[in-house]
Length: 377
Image 1: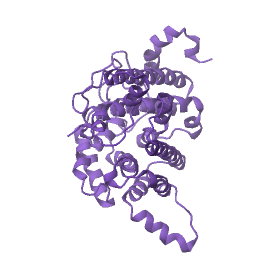
Image 2: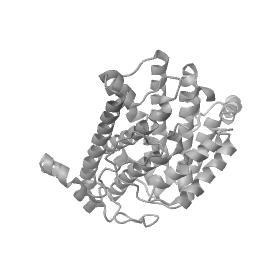
Image 3: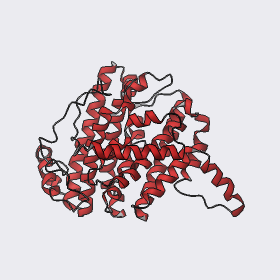
Image 4: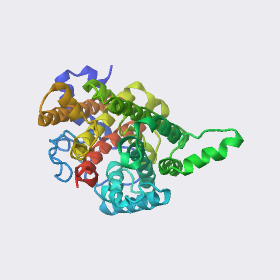
């Protein structure tokens, strides 16, 4: 029986933050000493109080139950962002639109979301993978000006996956397969990002990422089918979709970026999977809330949780936003409680990984609140 299951329900809710603080206040050695006091999962009740997001890019987003970012290092963020821009230029990614990529400041996201390293090259490896995954969505799923079309989606995603899990073709067909990879900037960037990450991730961590990318691509196909049908999904269906169309490929890199390895068996444990996917869904609902203004100006059908709730429950847009925020908060509290139970029984690597996921949630919200990617200008 877990420690949480021996508590009464009210006591469990009350004690979670203190329990996790005790478990994680002395984590395994990390690549840097993170400033700002204790940084473990659930460090203190004060650290976990909801905070109103910054106004930039977040007009209309209600208060969310979410940790604050552990650190803010603008110089490190700028270094990573400039390196990402140079790499995007080399791969042809977002050609003619790099100033928009610069302004989105993905380097800042990596700095905020991975506070247990200050190695810019590790952060760059994670940033390349993340930007390539975003580009897959933009080029193939969302942006018609970049060539997306539902009828092409399955074929494009199938080829894109070979960039991270290479096809082993008979010799006479190898040149054609290689040409298909080189001529597409998304495939080029996926392969390049994966190669960079392999400097720091072991075979099990790389295979983990392949799995999460494959699941992500399934979700892209699911959304494409909704677009083809002109159908708004049910709320439950959309939330199930958001579990697989999520930041999980980014969150899965927490240990590789941090310089340690969570054993494959622990990552695959059903209880860990539940906790981590719950956290990644919550992080992605932050994206839904902050991207609403941009999507409201789109000419096509857009899917986000407030829009789906408003359609199904016939409520006002504002009420749909509030209900979405409550769902986000429920998921974050669920992760907090379940991570506490897992940390009580898990390995030091698992405790550190769960603390890293908690830090990722705080960095993700902080980045969304300020990134120009989610403004309407």
